[in-house]
Length: 170
Image (tube, rainbow, N blue to C red; front, side):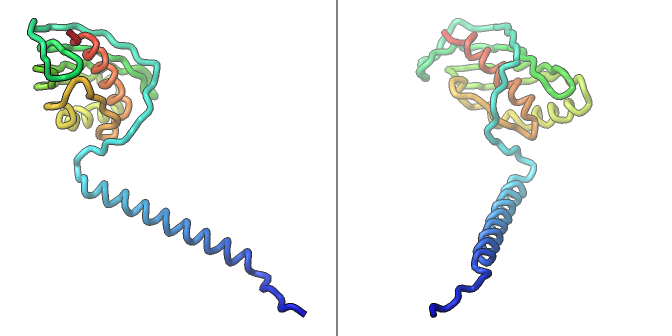
């Protein structure tokens, strides 16, 4: 007669898989926490989907010179665009002003609508953190994904930048 197989084999394999999964999840959570601690007060930049329900308007003050350093030519000058974006309580606005020289952003400013206390907190966090991701960067490739927890404000900023990119093209 062949020897009998232990009856708990499936249970042991399933338990081992569950334990392995739990260990992997703890390691991932630990690495995320370490990355956040290492970042300190710095922003964490992560991907985010773009919404289609955003409207923009723009005004331009441009100088006649153009750059030749990038594949797309942009006129030097200061450009301003306003973007409306949606948050859980309604609509907010962000006004973005970028100064370009040879296709590079040399200065930037934002003005937020801060129409709601909760939104104002996110908008202020964005305003205090975004410049290092913008100043000195090429306008042709500028696109922020997520700054200081303000995903909606970041989306509004990106939409205003897209309008500025279109307006600044030579």
